[in-house]
Length: 156
Image 1 (cartoon, one colour):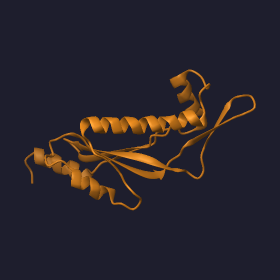
Image 2 (cartoon, helix red, strand yellow):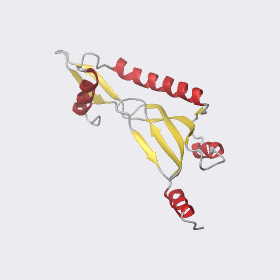
Image 3 (tube, one colour):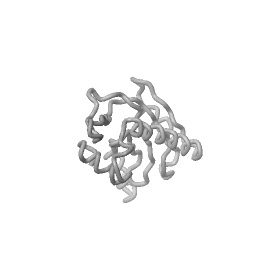
Image 4 (cartoon, helix red, strand yellow):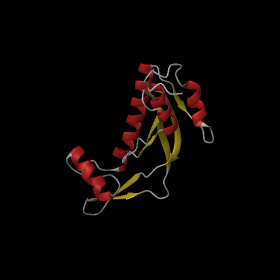
């Protein structure tokens, strides 16, 4: 729904009831709240949040933090890194109606990669951008999935 200006406006109206607060300031607040909530949750659950620099091999960082027991499900680390994202830009016309466009070029913003140990899939990653329209990516390892299925069936 957030892929177009009209779809984004429909989502906003469903959330807030009107376009009254549809502006860049309110959109930016989402990312700040998201970041604070991720950090608070991670602190409470003792999950490391690591802010990575450009060029760092993030999969190697996560591999070092994988739990010893593959049967220990849940989030085991959160990696944050900057990447381009399709952020919305809101401009109000003279009639007060918001015009929504996508910023070009895409600005670089923090993305959060939640590294999860799943009993069926093994190590999976859910990567989220905290800015509306919240683009997400799910990364699964098919080899690990097949190995876990075979192991459950007693196969090497």
